[in-house]
Amino acid sequence: MIASALLLCPALAHADPCEGRLPDRAGETFSGVVRYVGDGDSLCVGPGTDPATWIEVRLSDFDAPELHSPTGRAARERLSSLARGRVLSCVAVRGRSGRVIVHDRVIGAFHLEGLSVGDLLRMAGGREGGN
Image (cartoon, rainbow, N blue to C red; front, side, top):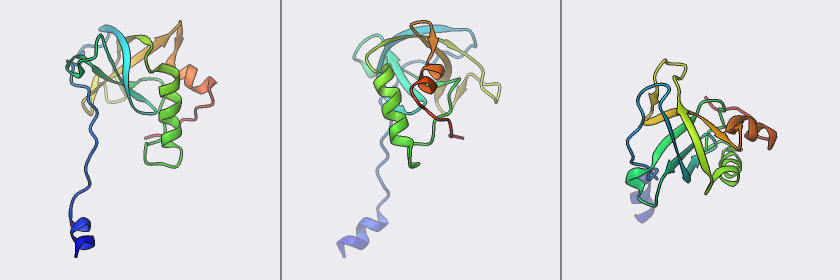
């Protein structure tokens, strides 16, 4: 009886905590400490510990495997170990669709110590394979 009830209940979704205002124009710059890493190509930056100020960003130059794929968790861990807790500077850019905001995330070009985060992920063995 309990097992069938569990099958009928929807799975709980784990939403990211980032709730800050998203830059909506290509060329807008912003920076902050990486506070949260959602998967292998998205993260949140913010100036402090309040998630209401965190901006969720999709990397413009790296397409990681989906989190539920066999290598998805490793991709998230790679981005987390590279960036979490570090200050990143970012520029909002247009994606393939021509939009700056896609799926409630701003598309951004990040740099860390002068190198793009996408290039750093590739140098760390990251393989692209998302959609």
